[in-house]
Amino acid sequence: MKTEQTEPSGRVPPDSMDNNSADLIEKMNAILLSLVPGSESPIEFSRGLASDIFMGFAGPDLHPDIETKDVNVPGDKSPVPARVYYHPKSAEHPSPLVLFLHGGGWSLAGLDEYDNLLKALAAQSCVNFISVDYRLAPENPFPAGLKDSQAALDFIFENAADFRGLPDKVAVMGDSAGGNFAAVLAQAEDNIGKIQAQFLLYPMLDVHSTHNTYPSRIQFGDGDYFLTRDAIDVSVENYGVTKEHCKDMRISPLFQTALADLPATYIIVGHCDPLRDEARAYAERLAKANVDVTLDIIPGAIHAFLSFGVLDNVKNYRTRLAQEISRRLSPG
Image (cartoon, rainbow, N blue to C red):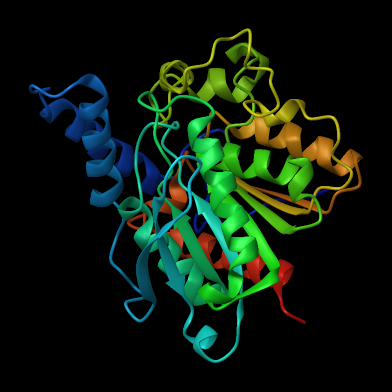
């Protein structure tokens, strides 16, 4: 296993956020304190709050040249919205394709919150992305969103040319709960050999074990580092699964035992992310199964940092991720 810790500019004390992330958390907390729930339901209020935070701190659009197109792709029960991000070179030469599955605890966020991140990745990786707005819990509990994601992936395999894509160069990517979906898809027997790589951004991989199984959840999950243990628990509750069922590999992919045939894997996570240690545990298990895996732990970084374009160092980390995508999906 290749384990890398990319140093940000300036020194970051061990187990501390970098100053830029600390400032961001302070601004987020100010938003939380200023909002008063109205007549909307708790889940609607949470969705609005998540959108305000992710859109408010997404930073400027540095890649307006990236062509996007809103489409519908097949879901499990009915078509679901999706957004395609085209690298300019794909107009002349088919490109690898990455299916992107957004985070939000299976119940929050959508396409708009990830626009700037996916434009940056498409611009720098020479790869086209398809972001899928799968059905959200709690209205659509497990396995609705996962089934939508699989249906979209099947459609991409069969219709890659419609997205200026190469059918033999398809990868999956997701962040947080979307990283959970991506990991589950990569493990699915019917997808083995078809998915060329998986890119897991601070993925949620184990919702069965108690929080104290992972020191990072205890150290960084109290509310001072963005993602909280309580938020993880609420996400699981919204997803509609009980603790008795959470060891199901479609819910907690960390417990998958058949790993040897999985595709090349890149995992990136912040050092100050409660999900850090389960990402490390999964990378270690993949390495023991002789899977090509790189674990990139970013000192000082919090959960979801790649989405926050206002952070000083995020451009460098997006570039690093784009380079990893290009390396693993190069048509050559």
